[in-house]
Amino acid sequence: AGSRRWHGGLGTGPVVDFDFVMADGTKHRVSVPGGTNLLEAAHHNGVPLEGACEASLACSTCHVILPDDLYERFEDKLTEAEEDLLDVAPGLTSCSRLGCQVLVDESLQDRQIQLPKHTVNFYVDGFVPEPH
Image (cartoon, rainbow, N blue to C red):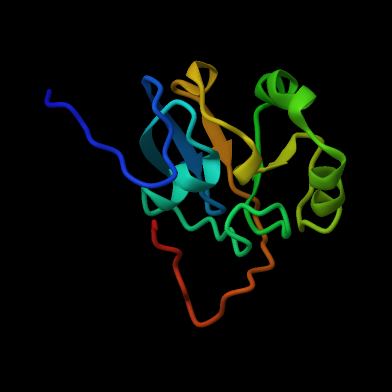
């Protein structure tokens, strides 16, 4: 296998493979270098996770749901600002996080990150975010 070059917003760690589980239950496999946040991982792999504020911690459109054990692993990095934004996210669960605030590491290898069943998107008319 050849080497990969990553551009814009992606981490520099070892490549991690995991699945985003869409609202309809289908899975979308992604591969990104460690250190990439979940929002950028989604954007660079065609996963429809909005991120209206471009990871500036000003909205909740990149809401994702982590498996219980992964949530516990990343829970210490949850800030009050993120908690406040999650309070307005539709479909909030006890394992909800903002994708822009969770960095991919080896603990995500072969795991599943759930997209919420419902969202409140800021974009309209079927806009799909593109990587920068």
